[in-house]
Length: 436
Image 1 (cartoon, one colour):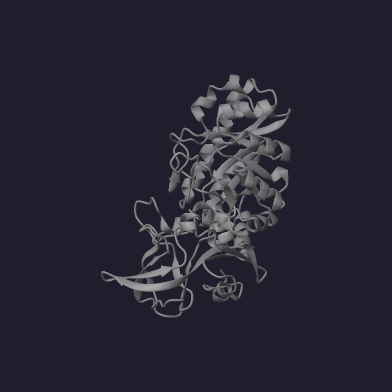
Image 2 (cartoon, rainbow, N blue to C red):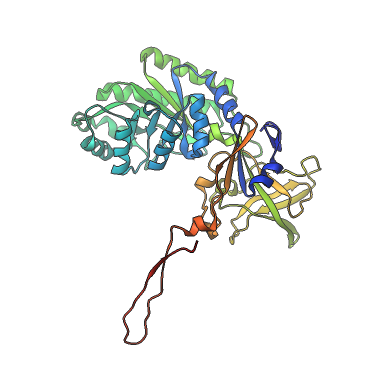
């Protein structure tokens, strides 16, 4: 954000008045600054791919694509989003542990850079439906454990990828392929890593695994996806990554690998790191109340739109950065628990947050909310639906997703009349669509 409570000079309060709340606001300038700062420091052999799962809004994906990022997708809808956003097939990879045949066929039809196969059975299934020359990466579950990840996704028993040890014994399966050409490996060790040394060590370990598997199994190294897992600081006592320190270490490891394998495409895939800082979740206070000596602000949005901020499943509840939008110059001298409107005690955006005095109608912003917002939240809980999303680009606000209406929520349902069960009579019923 160019200002704490304005985006490219547009007051967030004006956006809330124009588009209503709850509301996600994304700053295209922050997206560009984040990508460019990393891109200009990274070794030229490394291609940056945006993980659409972090924020699959097509306009966000289009911004990332315009900056030069490839797209990593994991569903039919994300693949269609990549195409809609203007991604060329050569800049799309598809991964996920449970791909359907429909998804595999869609990848083949579009001719993407590679399908990332996460089991030997999936590799065989892809081979059966492919034409000669189909490109695949093997997702490897490495033998080493990740360092510094808040959520580990490799190095231990996981549904993701093929164990390194198993792959070393899988030469016969690879030689049996008739249509698929294995061109490299993919590994993703973990997410939200804030330790540069951990990322460097993970990168070195993945590149070493690529060398070993290529030599043992006889496939070329045309592409190696080193994952990423770069984190951003959300909570107290966390610091953002030192980009210079990070890239100095990663570049040294990549330079050595690139010298051995000139022309090999190295992919770093990033979602949260690229999109997280660009977004603010804006809610409006409906009621302010006391309960047993504690102050509560009940807002119009919560866990249904922002499960990450609520932290359901976390061992300790920690608050995202939460700010008053209307009174940001005032002293934050009160403590409030900020909740949403849902009928569950889990619906807490922030606990005992320091804010200026809050009144009904005030706006509150949950910052660093550009990644893993509504699409990783139970948006249909209590049938509130999806919030509006706005992208500010070149000092102009664009509505990039409409808020769900009641008609949207009910329109795909079908009412079946309760059956008539009078004594001796047959059960009957008719189907009816939702009222318009």
